[in-house]
Length: 136
Image 1 (cartoon, rainbow, N blue to C red):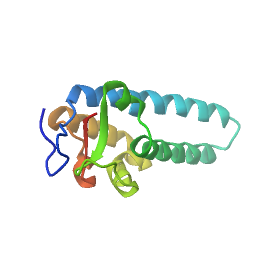
Image 2: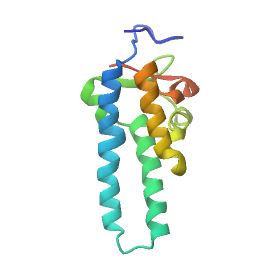
Image 3: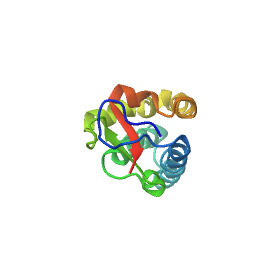
């Protein structure tokens, strides 16, 4: 395990396997379930309304999982931290998820982030946000 560059005494980067496992829960399973529930509840709504609500819910979920609680990270024993080892700020959470919350970049963002984790062990935006996923 690699030490976190630039801070966080005793923090080590989470393994690629743990990152992928937590992302399957947090970025695939939960958004799909939430999306189906919201879409079902808004079945009678006009498509632009339904799409707007789904986008807003996606953004809120991404920020919630980074700022409040991530079931996937909890399940595999990892956490998100700033380079100093503290909780990340709301600004860092937005930067960290920018490719995943822009509606028309979403699919490309997921593919890019998965490739980055597999190759480098970190998401592209982790560096931009000065945050790391580390062992809890």
